[in-house]
Amino acid sequence: MLIAATSDLDSLTGDFAKFADALAAAKKPDLFLWAGDMCDFKMPHQYRDIVRIVDRAGWDCPIVAAWGNREFEQDYEKIKQMTGTRVFFLDDELFLTEIGGRRIGIVGTKGSLDRPTWWQTRTFPDIRETYNRRFEKVTGLMTNMNALKVDVKILLSHYALTYQTLKGERSDVYGGLGYKAFEKAIAEAKPTFAIHGHAHFGTALAFADSVPIFNVAFPVNKGIVMIDPDKLPAKGLRSFV
Image (cartoon, rainbow, N blue to C red; front, side, top):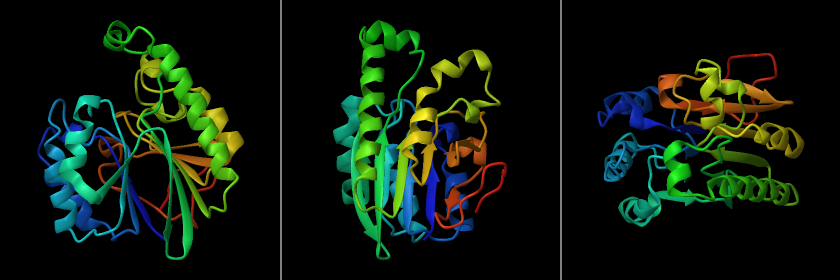
């Protein structure tokens, strides 16, 4: 099984040629995961272009996505209408599917921040409580997934799931990029692997105990991240399929 993942195409500022080239250069996967910010600021219509590029590349595999901070809640339904049945969006939800006779579980979330942005704090006075509740809900969903007969367990988030993958960003902004407590939760729940985006200048791979956490942001990887659940990197390595 081969799982592709990417996020933060907003970094391409509407020119998706590099994304199309990355698809052409990669092996066709069995599942494609999107970790948010696939469109630019206030440009939800770009989702239509992105899906067309994926289809032209012959990637007819299922696409499962989490929302990013560039996708505003008021545009969710519009984006769903544009993408139709091609993309299944998760909003603090557990999704189960079967690929090649193996059961796949995906917990998808926008994620949380230790330090909400100034705009978030002004616009949503209870944002800290929202992020704390989201963390508790997602942690519970990972626990629920462990109780099911799932062969491959994935946590998919937009915001960073560990500060380790933020190395390369300024250390004073770590709290505005992710939620550190997720690292311990992942180490305890032990999904097969975890994925996030958002950190454009971060590090591609880190570990929570033995669990790989991939920062799949397009500007970090300069392409699509390809993950074989049966050939995951071991702690201490910095290369992966």
